[in-house]
Length: 208
Image (cartoon, rainbow, N blue to C red):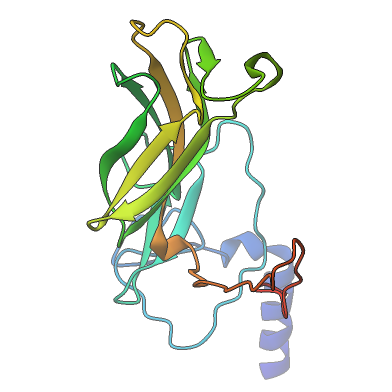
């Protein structure tokens, strides 16, 4: 009788697997997957993810990040008003003296963020000055970011050049990249002694 019962159970499991496979919910009566937990989950060891599906066109790009209290939060970079891994900000600086932007304070906190100028464009015709053979020379734009008073500042200028029309009102378009210091490693400063020469080699790479 016991043998027949076991045989019947084995046959039942083979013939009717859909009868025993179900969805389980914790704190929910309508689980949407094989296991759904509606609430906090604490994992003290490791977790293995067997399959990671690739993003398809139209899918929302969402990242998982660990907060300072060890909780996991989602970062939806497709949300235009939400947080992101990085930001691209364009500044249009106008009505300055000639082409000189000596100090523009962005107000961005240098403790929390990094600001990098990635492109710059000036819209007025320039002429060189205080240079012999001016027609044979040109000037490259100088754009940089620096920290002063705890915030990021921008400087922009064409060295040894100024507006060809001194009455013209110029305009700089400067594109910047902003990202959180939490998402980057700050490697510090590397001193490079040139010993009076023009070439040097690092004693070791900062990233290997």
